Every structure is written in structure tokens, then in C-alpha cells.
Amino acid sequence: MSSAESVNLSRNSARLMLMLLLAPALLWLLGLIVLPHVELGILSLRQRVAPRVYEPSLAQFATFVDEPLYWHTFVRTALMSIVATAITLLMAFPIAWTIAKIARGRVKSMMFVMCLIPFWVSETVRTLGWMILLRESGVLPALLVSLGVTPAPIEMLYHDATILVGLVYTSMLFMVIPLISALESLDDSLIEAAYDLGGNGWSILRQIVIPHAAPGIVAGCIVVFMLTLGNYLTPTLLGGKNSQWFTEQIYTQFITRFNWEQGAAFGFLLLGLSTAIVWAGLKLSGQKFGEVMQRS
Image (cartoon, rainbow, N blue to C red; front, side, top):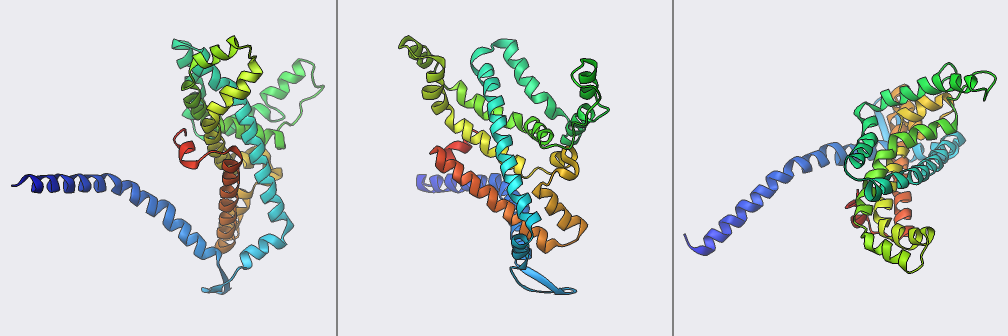
């Protein structure tokens, strides 16, 4: 066998190995993401006119526009998700900074494990734990009464603030990890030089730390926003009838009313909203999607 044939054989073997390695991921992508979205797209663009009789139509989207409850819930979900993402960022940044730049050794490992501990149990268990703490007969209202803060136990569930608490708690880890990755790559000598040149904490944070951590910030915000926007369990359990979360409307159409066409249309509207806000966030921050995803 000549050297050229040997090179071609090795190249073909490498290509075959690469295809075999990529095959499971491609099948997963096709079977669980592409095909379901194509089917949802087909469902959203048809209308049932008789039993098992359908015709192309945009009636599902017209229903969304004509019914104030639907678009009000749609806008409310978007705004609450943005607020939850902002609060998560504000709370996660000091934690990530402490883990990346201040804590050392066992303390650093312990702090990271403390961020992981809530995710050792399911979201259902975590949310039920908040319900036990915040309900009228729960731990926190009883503590407030014993401290004399309130004269009687108060119901702390079923409020917007309660929903935000649950969403922030559920999403915290997904903001902390990309922030730690971004902050660990920041050279400490840059900060020391900035202090030597007369900089203060705020100016260093604004001019050095935040610009350097921008990809991690945007990556964390994208992940947290998408998880929050598509969350169903936490807003429903902590918000009750007052949750008015758009995923609840999707669930109602699919499961309660068996109106798959309307549910599919709502699902595509939520997908479009998520894509639009993520795109706007990337444009406003001046970041590129590929670079940002490397931080997530």
C-alpha cells in the first residue's frame, strides 16, 4: 500500500469515527428538538373545522390578539422573567466574585457546594419547601409573630414577590457558574494596578471587572431568562391562581381543553418572545452569541 493510500485510509477512518461520535447528538437534536418544533409549527397553522377535518388558518394567533387575558399574561410573563433575571444577576455576582477571587481552599469548595446543594433534589421538592416556609401556618410567618413584627400570621404565598423568590432561587446556580468562569480569568494584577493608579472600588468594577465579565454576565442572563420564561411549576405553585404565567396558558390549552392547535400557537409565541429578547440583549451588550455560549 502506497503512502497516499495510507493517508486516504486514515482520513476516511477519522471521518467515519467523527460521524459515529456525532450520530447520537444529531439524532437527539433531530428527534427531540427539530421534529417536535416542526410538528408544533404545523399544528399552529391549522384550524379544526370538523372532527378530524382541518384547514390552514391563522385563527390561533388571532385568538391571542383578540383575547386580552392571553396577551396580558404574555407581557406579564416577559416582564417578570426580566425582573427575575436582573435580581438573580445582582445576587449572583457577589457570590461568584467571592468564590472566584476571595475564597481559597476548602472555603471555596464549600461555597460552591452550597450553591449546588439545592439542585440535589427536584424542583418540585424545592418549591414545596418554599410553600412550607411561606404559607400562613408556615415557619416564617410564625417567626415574625414570635418576634413581634406582625400581630398575627400572614399569608406570604400567592404574591408576585413570592414568585420572584422562587424563580431566583431556582435559577441562581445557572448565573453563578458562567460568572465564576469569567471572573477567574481576570488577572489580579490588573485590579492591583488600577488601585495603584488611584482607582476606587466602583470605578474598577465599572471599567475593568464588568467589561471583562460581560460574556459571562450575558451567558448567565440568557440561560436564566430562558429557564424563567419557560418555567411552569414554580409560578403555578407559589403564585396560585394569581400567577398568570404564560406556560400555564399553554398547559391549559394542551391538557385541559385538548386544543392542541391553540397550545402550539402559544408555544411558538413564547419561543419567538424568548428569541427576540435574547437577540435584543446581545445587541445592547455588544456580545456575540458564539462567544457568550462558550462561557455558559
